[in-house]
Image (cartoon, rainbow, N blue to C red; front, side):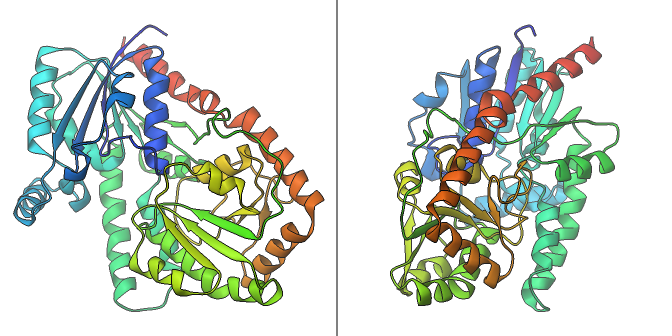
Length: 403
């Protein structure tokens, strides 16, 4: 495939790498830089303005970055403007007029082959792009309306359910509108690939799964530990629900049998309800950490008790690369080709969760078998170099069709 000029739009700066979204964006940039020239455009939050962009700039021809105001008046003006343009509120929140102006000026002077957009909420920036010949590719990390539908199954009626019903309907409307504005769309799971194909039949859809850097996350034998660990952004509702549920419904029974057992929660921007768990016996809330590897290395297992959400979990691939057994719900393990009892242990009910935790803790041979099978799987199918190759295929297909 010949070198292309790519304009790469993302709502978040992919550095530092403390959540799955940033890791995927960073790895995509690094992958593309090997064969193309990339211009990165991002509307920064005020707290990102001082972040060192050198680790990102080495993969980019140039970086266009504006600081998006978080002042109430500025946010209100963006939201009002979005309403007038019939954009979703999430899209309006991330729309920075200064960045749009820079994009308009740049694309009126230079021609790009590919406009690559991360997340549907960045779709309104397409209106600022003047490169008429460029193919347009959207990278979805998850489908929000699928996530809202799953959250609706977890609770009864009340204010939260009414809000979720509204969110589900609205997300379904604006996500469909967004994906139809692109020539090609990538998804991270087959379920989401089918969702896009059904709603945008004229759009090319490619499965580009999440991956892991198998050299960075090096293997080590299982750890005979009394710590299970959850990893994730702790302002994300499905993650909040997951850790609250495990702490309330599973941990007490595990600790009744193993009094020194610990549930460790690692992740940035912890919700107050998650922070409050630290007052419970056997719960540690660590917040954001610079390097997740030492915490995984000290863990008996990674736990993924998700009951809603979408996309696929990079943390599962990271744990498996390091030789740590994974205990997950079916939803948590979705999108990864895992065989239960071979690569991971699955559990849904509190009783099943207690049983699986005790199995791993009491059976080192089982933990070792899971560790070896997990490492073998990620080496064969989930190294980033393998997972991102379908993106190249989609680019080539769309560029050939354009010529």
